[in-house]
Amino acid sequence: MIRRIHHVAVAVGGIEEALAHVRDTLGLPLAHRETVAQQKVDTASFAVGESTIELVCPTDPGSPVARFIEAKGEGIHHIALEVDDIEAELARLKERGMKLIDETPRAGAGGTRIAFLHPKANRGVLIELVEVPALSK
Image 1 (cartoon, rainbow, N blue to C red):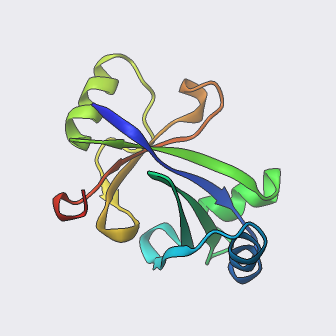
Image 2: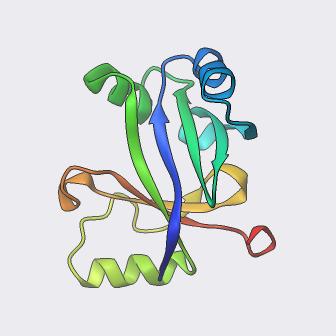
């Protein structure tokens, strides 16, 4: 079951400049910062109500986020939806014919488990499913 919008991710070319803009210009406090080696990104998250804005900056020129920025420039990369049970949600979506990028969850920032749904199956929007660790809920 989808619980809420977990975060909106914005692809950026420079984490320090983007972080300073969100923090100093928009006035949002930094909630979490992490390098996610498996995803080849540096992240910075800012709390906005029950959701967050997450900056994602590639750490490798061949990463998916780097390719996104090269093709489309900086901007909204994906919308993340929090789910209670990521395996059950992936199975449900696959049964309904949803095109999945990830058929099994992988590690995400902050100890989460994540999986992506293909943008071609979602009107051009990359959707990330996020399962938050039980202690963080």
